[in-house]
Length: 193
Image (cartoon, rainbow, N blue to C red; front, side):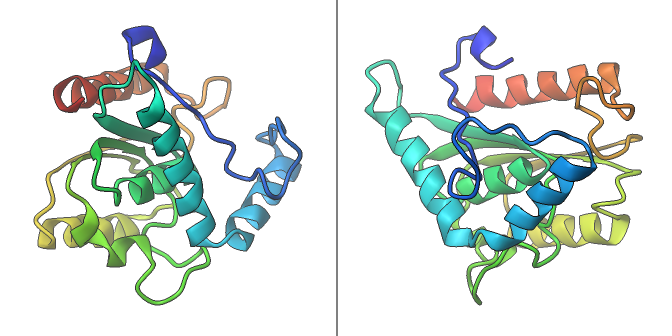
C-alpha cells in the first residue's frame, strides 16, 4: 500500500533466526501458536538489531531522503513502536500493537518499550480495536496514559473492531475501517516524511 504512494518500503522477516528464509506463518492455529512461541523466545535486543539493519539499508539507498518512518500491525505494531526509539524515525503507525502493556517479549529492566518513551522523538499514530481481546481496555488506557505523561506527539484512534480487523480474508476484517486506517497512515507519512 505505501509503495504505491511513492514510499520506499522494506519488510523484514521478524523470525529469520527461528524459521527458514521466506517462511510465512499461516494465520491458523498452528501458525499462530508458532508465532506466539517465537515472540516470547526472541529477545528484544534482537528485534532492535533487525530494525537497525533495515534502517541502515534504507539510509544507504541513493533514493532515500533520510526521513524514515515505520509501520506495523499486531506484533509488528509493537516492533514499529520499538523502531520509533531510533532518533531518525519521524513518523510511526502502530496498528493494534500487541504486548505494549505487558512483558511478553523477553527483555531486561530498562529495555521494555514503555520504559524508553523518552527516546521517541517522532510522531506516533496509535490505532486500536475496542473489541480486541489481546489488548483490553485497561491495557490501552495504560499505554495512553504513559504516552500522555511522557508528552509525546501522538494521535490515538479506537474503532469498534476486533483484533486483526485489517487482515483481508479474516472473518474479523472490516474493509471500510481498514481503508480509513490506511488513509490515516498515509496522512501521517505525507506530513512527516
